[in-house]
Image (cartoon, rainbow, N blue to C red; front, top):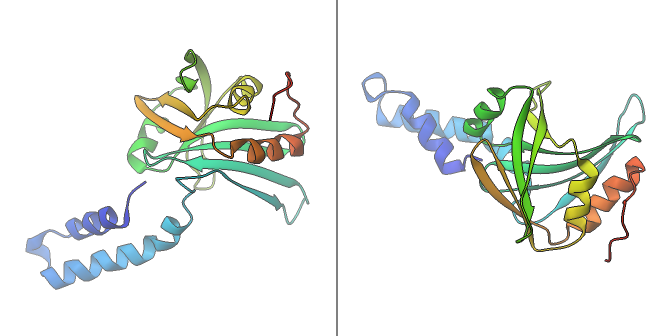
Length: 193
């Protein structure tokens, strides 16, 4: 994710010195920053898991999502968009990382591991963003990944498109099981809490 300072500097540099005074460039940069503030405020937490239950105003369908962000510009999301639609995916929050997702084919390799366990190398589906949402990559082995996360550990690491990031697993269990329950997803093994 871009920080407020980075956004200010990028906007400041959009107007070359020969085209505007220092004051004009500063005002333009402040206007950019003000316009970006709501988006910055809505970024996922970078230190802890969060979740949300929402109801569609037209269909009354309940959606339960859990997520955590990383300072490396990725969000790990556990989604229940309908009773039989449970998925886990990674989405970029940084525009420079989003370019890698857009340039991907229909699948891409994602490596992941919990703590020091052996790494998994899987082909994940690339999903095209709609309505302004980013491209995402989603695992084809949702329950396997879910069980690895819920089995415990301190952190999970992912590598996608050359970007390696780490997410804490502290408090992940309560948020993920809420999403699983909403979708009727069941654990294949009994996981100790």
